[in-house]
Length: 379
Image 1 (cartoon, rainbow, N blue to C red):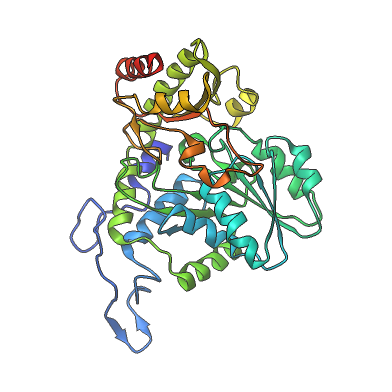
Image 2: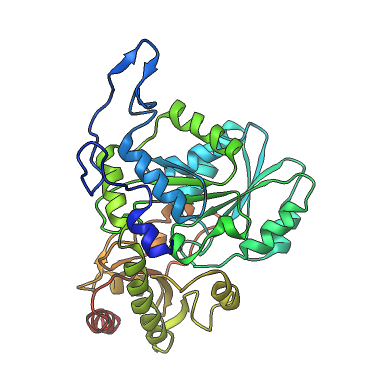
């Protein structure tokens, strides 16, 4: 089936008991068993398995073109679980432009448990090659990255790692692109991670995460960790993400249409130093983005002339763009990463420019969004 059809139907057959078209919310913690140690259809406790969550996991797997997916209580819970595949002394190479929460987890939590991290520009394959050690077990990509929207060549990195004697795992955070725009597993990645809070949910009303894999052995290890750790989403959360997925393709096309036009406007504005948007010709990885992505997505970052104060003043003077963290909802959001989502990188080599503004461009009418940005830039 084509993507749009999968988004509506994958994992979401009518309920066998009632024929309900929408996946029911199985709001239960436990299940009656047929006998001692004989659960019905594998359901014994909802931390381990829940029908609503299983429907979401089947849908996510189908959208990424994989046989296996696991749902989590948040994107950070998904990331933390993936890192628990490693052991003390292992080395991880990660992008030097990653979400502030990811950096905080890696540098300020997991490093204390004996994991070692090196942060490099993963858009440069040579930097990855130079950072590899005999202890490297995982390469962590965000592409496009957060917040500078760098694009890493997934296929080139995967081919390089597959030929390497150590064969470290390649994980791709696909939150910004979604499976509609980019399919990392088809490009050679081993794991795909999502914050389902963002575009997959799409309505700013749920927190969730996911990990998608193609190898059964890796899936079994992660499934054990999912159950052992227990950072799973509730059935209502799963229902909300399933509902959001149904319109993912429609929304992403509109997000990208608005963002592309707005990026072109900003690139020519005298108060803007530089625009970061994967499908804008000025982007340094423009060719790679067009090769591995369907469109440029809904995220734009740009540098404002006038420094930190100008960026703050701009963000505080929009009317339609809501000043808020997060992204990927139908409504447009604006933030200053250095003071908000990426505050944890302050004083480190990953510190972001203080005059950087990040937009999550929604699905409103473009003319209204443009007018809002125009008046805020005048402020």
